[in-house]
Amino acid sequence: MITVLCGGVGAARLLGLLQREVSSFEYTAIVNVADDLVLHGVTICPDLDTVTYTLAGLNNEVTGWGLVDETWRVNQELAKLGGEAWFQLGDRDMATHLFRTQRLSEGATKTEVAAELAARLGVTIPILPASNEPVSTYLETDIGELSFQEYFVKHRHAVPVSKISFRGVEVATATTEVLSALKKSEKILIAPSNPLLSIAPVLAIAGITEVLEQRRDSIAAISPLIGGRALKGPADHLMTELGFESSAFGVAAYYGNLVGHWFIDEVDYAQAARIEELGATVTVLPTIMTEPLSGAALAKGIAAWLN
Ligand code: FO1
Image (cartoon, rainbow, N blue to C red; front, side, top):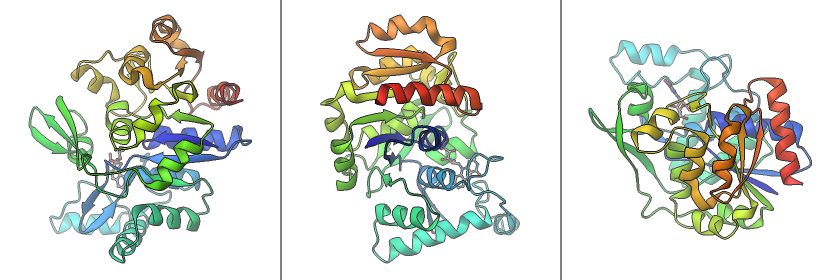
């Protein structure tokens, strides 16, 4: 069994690729919950939903989040009423949030709800929230403190950030499912998700890093930065704003001793030696998963490391 630490889109693509191209292994996804929010009284778990929808073949390729063939009637009415319409909830997607909110109010855990949603959408990979307890990302910015979605969506991640914190992480614990998956896995992959916003809040939850630290040799990561740039989202400028180098090496240095093997893009081949100096081994290959040929190359490289 292979466990993948996940944020949203990048991780969902990786899981889809592995399920298709490296099908001799069983995968488990451990997913960030620090982007979650309650809006209009409903609980929304963007990364869990992005992973679930993508594996179900139902993700909206136009927006990058939410469901395919979406309509926006509810959100349009909300906008007319002067409601919080900046965070767009599609009509189809809304059913997921209503379902989750109802089940949580009945006493189900986020883990149970994620499993129910996955099963009903035909997803076979276990999708595990990193914690059942609330953990929420907050960012100190030039315009004051913002919640994750205020920063990401309302302000289009365009305001400089000086500090990131994960509220609730002091008391949150990893679920038994998460700890058991990490312990049972032959190998662990860190998806090319935002290290500071998506993977850091998973690693910050009590119990997770402690398990990972004992097994550096079985942990690999795929660099989310290619030629110093993120394919999507603010990872590149956030690295710089928070004092890290915005490069594959910068991400490797940020994870430090946690990762034993790196997959970096071929445009970053010159950084391999520096990353090796950190004590990790490196595979250089095309890593962009939106292009079929490079996706196949990445799958082959990961398969070689897994075997
Ligand atoms: N991202 C946006 O850029 N704009 C939105 O209006 C938006 C709504 C939304 C609704 C449900 C959902 O599950 C995700 C949504 N996202 C939206 C994506 C969300 O902000 C993700 O957390 C980020 O893309 C980071 O992974």
